[in-house]
Image 1 (cartoon, rainbow, N blue to C red):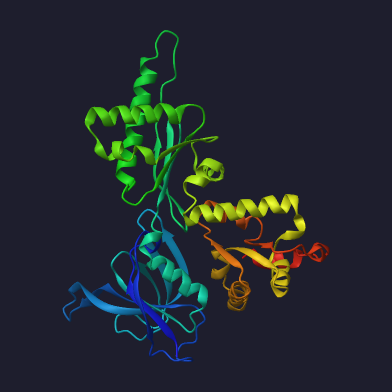
Image 2: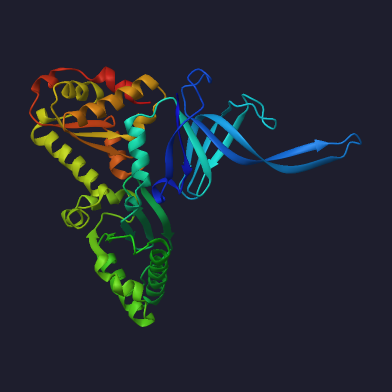
Length: 386
């Protein structure tokens, strides 16, 4: 029997998925498919034509069952768009016709798989845990540019980008520059109040080159005192000032690697992944026989039960080759069985993007395996670029 998960989705990592495991009435062989099946109620526009030639259109509620072929995630609208062919007979949609369904907040849906592997179930359980919400926020800024980000356990989300022209300082006249800077600081402050939930966020990182972060912090506290903004004043201790090379998102990688930042957010999963990746690259430089990347090397290390920490991108679990996908699942289960630690990186997170640059899979070993250095991994690496 196939298994399905039915439930409500609150934007995946943004909220909670309430679900139950159910036995499905979909038996092996009923559908000729390898991909997931989504069942969802939706509104369909139907147009009818009378014998006199006049036409009339109306909307009907119907249930559509599609075999998912492509997935797109809109981070701004927080909606999953799933496209595929209709596999269940429907009076309004022909069997085999392509259709797109939106999985969004508070819309019921059912996902059917012929097999739920441990990785899929673990990620559903993680998304169901309300403590997995974004508990770290970051404001990366420089004069005229600021990015307000939420750092969840799975991804880094840019909630607001502030791009403003600030007049240059002119000899004998700096008033226009100061006015522009104040307008910029005010926009950043409003963005923080709008997009950061201080009830959940444990730490707000303010990062910038030079003294921009310090000047902004002074401005924000001064304005909070003037306007009696208790939200800012009561959460003043949550702000952490850190140096960054620029005000763009990519600077977050170096910011999260700072020792002060790591100690402050050491209890978050995002920090754990960043620390694991930093440890891997450090060992790769100092003790290369204990750090390997690439599918072939990691599998051989797993066969010897030598893996202490496995670092793997979730992108590998979404590859189109089902057999290859199962190999990665078996690898993860094998590492766990030998008491190893598994870190699954999201391809939407900055640390996940960095891991993908080294094939998306890496391992820190319990003991050196110099014999792996003699083997070529080029053939396997080409298989993973999918």
